[in-house]
Length: 248
Image (tube, rainbow, N blue to C red; front, side, top):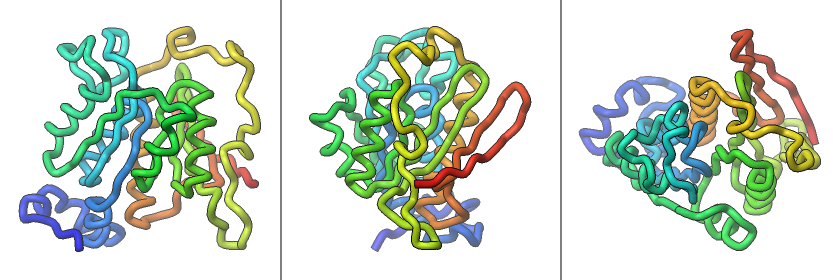
């Protein structure tokens, strides 16, 4: 049985007094193993909030190195980390945030040859990647492995978040939708500009990444209703949230 030390009880006191979390929910957080793909703009707030929340094991997948142009939005990295592998930089930051959390760095790119093995070691996957090839690969691997996936995307001033559990049925017995039900095919190469080409407001990635972290906490503790079959849209310029329902 997972137990909480005196220092952990004090650290997580504001969680434990919540009826929706409580001691049992905090124990589930400590027992959870969450894989975060990308230690960039989205991965930064996801990793920091999950570590602070007491998620017991965090995996970080990123084969890139920290660059100066990252620091406007990738707030898990410090200026003195420029040039270091992002997986290492992120792991070091998380250890400072919460020494009770175990961090596994995977300094690789997710590809067909390794994705299944990496995902198998975790309970929940968070996709903060910045390319369609990885998004489709991760979504397919998670569906096949029956792993919940919290996925998001950002661009310029807007972003979106959804939760995928296509291996389960909804309350009416209908299958939950998959990533390919939402986006059947990736757009042609070059059709969607990258953040480097189009730009992105740094704070936007904080909004969307924090929403991803919230969905993970809900999935682990059982609190609330995850964004399964719903795509949450955020327009930063209009300060507006909208939700679109989608189905299999």
